[in-house]
Amino acid sequence: MALFTWNETLSVNINSIDEQHKKLIDMINDFYDNIASRSNKDNISTLLSSMKQYTLEHFTREENYMKKFNYPDYESHKKEHDVFIAKVNDLEEKFTSGKLVLSLEVTVFLRDWLKKHIMGTDKKYSDFFIKNGVK
Ligand SMILES: [Fe+2]
Ligand SMILES: [Fe+2]
Image 1 (cartoon, protein in one colour):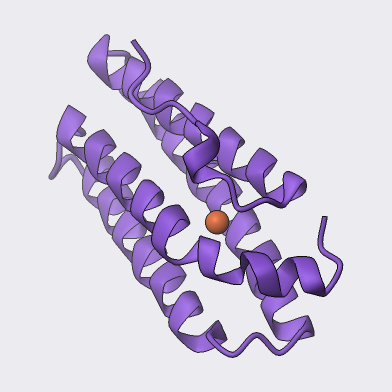
Image 2 (tube, rainbow, N blue to C red; image 1 turned 180 degrees about the vertical axis):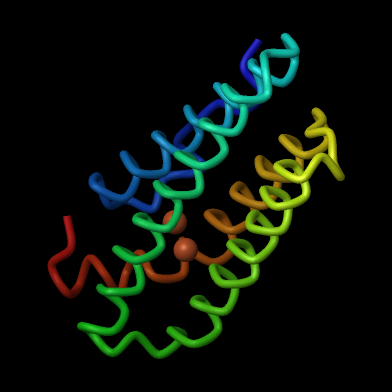
C-alpha cells in the first residue's frame, strides 16, 4: 500500500503543477518503501537527496511564477518552502552523520507536510496563477 495517493482533492487545477506534485508524491512513496524494507543506507541517501533536489526545483518554479506576477502572498509562501527545506537539510545531515535512523515517522512527516502545504497554501494561488495564464 502506498503511503500517499494523489486524488482530485489535491488538485490546484493547473496541470503542470499537479504533475509536479504527483512526482513528489511518487518520490515520497518510493522513499517510504525503501525505509519500510530496510534498504541500505546508500539507496536511502540517494533517494533523499533526489527528493530534496526535485522539491527545490518545484519550489523554485512556484516562486518564479509568484515573483513574475507579483503574487501578494509570495513572502509567506516562500517562508514555508524555506522552513521545509531547512528541516530536510537537517534530516539529511543527521542521517549522513549517523545521528538519526530514518524511520517511518519521517516519511509520515513528509507526507503530512506536503499534503497540508498543497491543500492550504498552494491552492491559494490557483485562481491567481490561472488568471495569469499558467497551465
Ligand atoms: Fe507545490
Ligand atoms: Fe508551495
